[in-house]
Image 1 (spheres, rainbow, N blue to C red):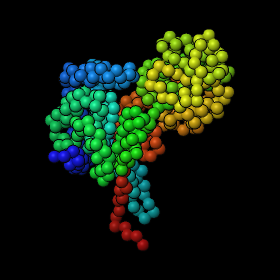
Image 2: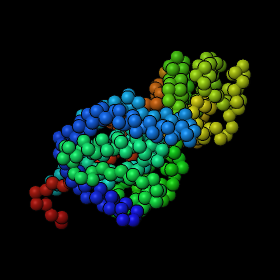
Image 3: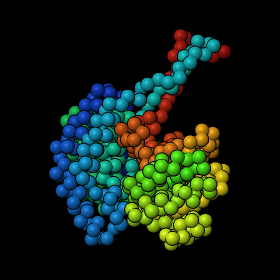
Image 4: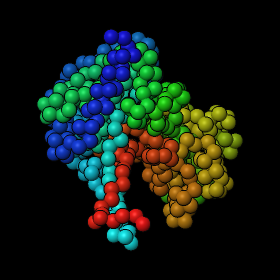
Length: 420
């Protein structure tokens, strides 16, 4: 069978499976999730051996340290995947719930019932744990799933997928509830992106170039965020100890991810006190600093590089940080809204009015007060896992979990009413 027909066949089977999944009992879904979690733990050695093949290939290609960090699976990562599946099993099932039931003057009761979206197509790069997150969330939300991972993680993805799929079959899930494209030919993706009416939603997870290409080609709605240029603003009323620990965590804890801080903004009134010890901490951790003229003047002993206009737009995904001194809260907000990517931004302040002003005026999907941007994650937000992060405003925004994988239909209860 040629590629086009084979891919269409996979999508058609997923569509058929989605009809059964949408009405599957919560108890069956939860039992399958728990069996999947147990299967992952039992299969650790097999999964890590498969991941080793991908890591070996990545080393030969001399891929970046950030890329290797996203690709690598450890015992802890696999346990984390299992924990996520168990947590999803423990969450309330959104499917079938009725919200906002109101009574009209004519006696009609009108509400919204949560229903699955249908068939979800996820395209992702380098992170094998995404396989388990997507399967778990789609199962619990009643959606069928088609996965297409990157060629650099193909052995890891297939190993995890096969373990999960076998566990699901044991618990009686409909056949073809989950599918994985095992070919690396990009034509397969292009074919699927044209199947509007069969596939209901596309979620690309990876670099900016991948996401832009998918958004350009897709005939199906796409959930996306292009990159994460995240900011931390240290206000004039900040507790500088909190500012120091939060800023350090946001940049250093895991720099190669989309919720890591890329630009540090500091109010002029505290810059001379805050920047020297902060810079020492960051430089000692291997961070390269690039600063505005006033930042460089304050840190002249450190000899940091001058930040250019392109630095304010940069998602480094590395131990590099832009630093700018601002005169006002309004200047900080304006900078974030101009150069940011509507991902995650934080203010460090003890002033309630400044905090609320920041929350209201920063146009990002996740906005923090006195906490690290590194928390923008479905698991940390209590969603069990995430299928992606959206910086769009329709239909979902921020980390996407079970609720964001459902839509609604109106349900109307009457007693024989007719319209006059």
